[in-house]
Length: 371
Image (cartoon, rainbow, N blue to C red; front, side, top):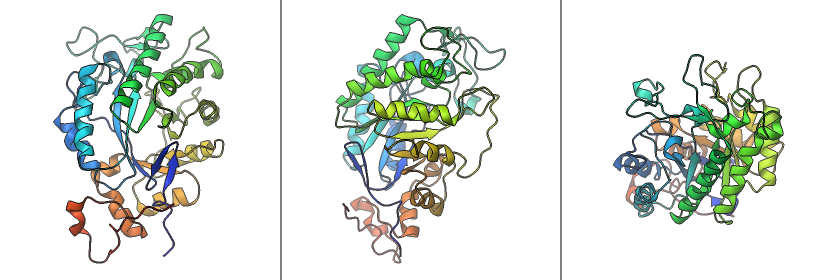
């Protein structure tokens, strides 16, 4: 059998990954005052045994007003840091999987209810709501409540907030940081001409719209240990007339690489409810392919990647260097095990589960590092 490309190792900055499968950050809306709970211990704990190469902690707010919902995880003070530390320490007692964290600020998409209650915007006068901020005072949807446009002082506070959260992540021993600059959240709001109508040095041209996200990246890169990767999730397209395009994303990717970015995760959409997305298996892979052709750092493909052969083809054809799983690995938390069995790969499994290896896959758990 031809050796699986999906189960080949890869170096990302100073971090060696055992295969090309990473677990994407997935919001759980189960924190209390920004602090992780036992739900996160269960959720992340069982995914840490999946056989994936890296586990990414969900979008983690750098300030209380940066949360999407009142129940998001945060990393802005000693209490939120201690809560994440408790979960990480427990996971590392039983799993050697590298752990990354996604740092984020929701901007105008903040102050929302949880998805299973409809996700409606919560106004400032709501007991669980607060005033949102954004590059410009433009509501997310027609008739919606307007955010406050950020001034110079507020921009500096946010830059410092990202850097401080990165320092806390480093103290926790997190292996990598990912900045969330996609899905319509604050850094993407600056990048997109749909949400950014500023007339200062942070608005107008693509160079100006990239300026604040790049400043945030530089601050985080300086605050996080140089031997650990800082990566960015970017948007390949806004899926709306007049929005950011794949050419914009490529320029952003090249600017990030020049500043020391270790890898790029290419997603799309989320900037406006009027977006027109044509989805289906591999629908975002062309964005990853275009970015990969323009940079020399690893690129991650995302979006409706659920089939083993599909994931193998993405890596084998060179469309991307890694695939990120989200909903698919929630549905099947042992997806990497099953993919390895199907493709002839090997995965790391905990000693307690070694006896579960199926009879017909005698070397599935016989993991040996390969150079």
